[in-house]
Length: 157
Image (cartoon, rainbow, N blue to C red; front, side, top):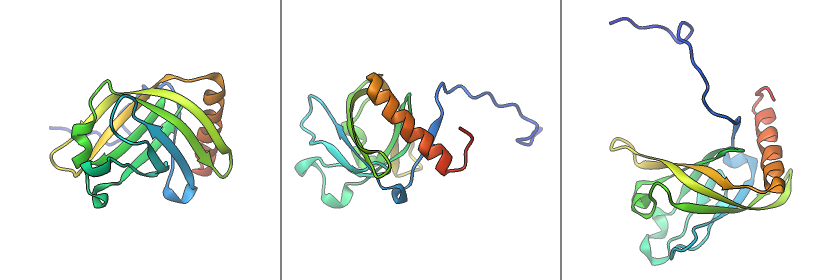
């Protein structure tokens, strides 16, 4: 079997939008609602969200992480114990993002879970969410935040 080094392989980017990655140091917070369910809103640092399910889970089990954001959507990583609460096609609402650089951004952006990565060998589940409803103002605000994230991480804008 032959192996080509990454330099010798060709890679074609299929994503339509550039995405920015954030850490908890970026102080970017958000609020995500789960419509039609008995789950309370998801809120906290957008790069280290705390999710609440009332009595469904012990507070020690409550933690999640939004690892990236683009004009196309976002990627949410959460503990495996949360996997039964989400399915492909579920609709969530990214209601608001708060960022020191952009103040409080009301978005009310609908998004659908398009990818669910639940592997036996890791203790986390990944949810790839695609925006389905994005107003022009929400698009501009998310675009500014992504642009800031890309420039902060030294990526070409």
